[in-house]
Length: 116
Length: 107
Image 1 (spheres, chains in turn yellow, cyan):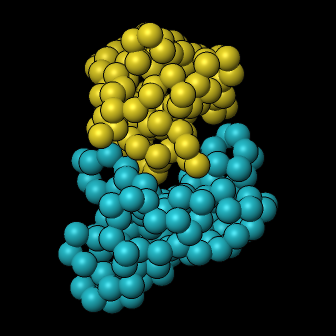
Image 2 (cartoon, chains in turn orange, cyan; image 1 turned 90 degrees about the horizontal axis):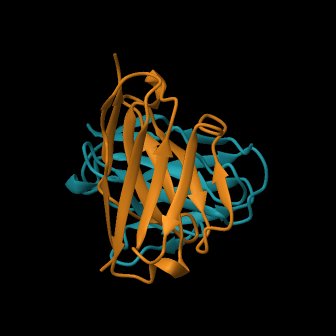
Image 3 (cartoon, rainbow over the protein chains, first blue to last red; image 1 turned 180 degrees about the vertical axis):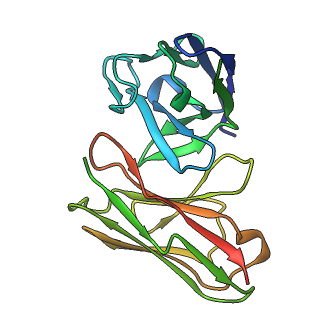
């Protein structure tokens, strides 16, 4: 069974940083593209970033480009999202998902709150 | 960027009703579209991929159709567990985009 478990969320001040992790199991992680999607309170789903299976190509939403960095460690079956220069509008539940014909299987999410 | 427009944004329906949700893409996306269900406090769950393919384990009352710019999600007989918010999403090109969501409520 595919399982994705996010961690690393929390409360951070504007301008601060956080690193999210997503531990994967139940599938061959190194063969799969992966991504992050977020849901802010009262808003819809917003795609954040994707990374191909090798890590050689990455993609970002304009709203996070230059501030967030997606990466992966295929030896540890783990996906990461480094979030810098956080803003109030980055407050959301962040989900990781494996990517195949869109976001296929999703983790349970980790909550990021940006507030002073 | 490809804009995804869902309609309606909300609807009220009764158990047993047939429900149809529409998603329109601002440009052609072939069949590169998925439908997702999200319940409050839970992770989204994919129901349909490639516009019309049922995700494994999803009840057959859910179906998807369409290609190009017009897509439809149909629930043939609404069940109590189907009250949720539904999203379409295109993966034809980056940035990936979602529709605004359709909240299905109990009448």
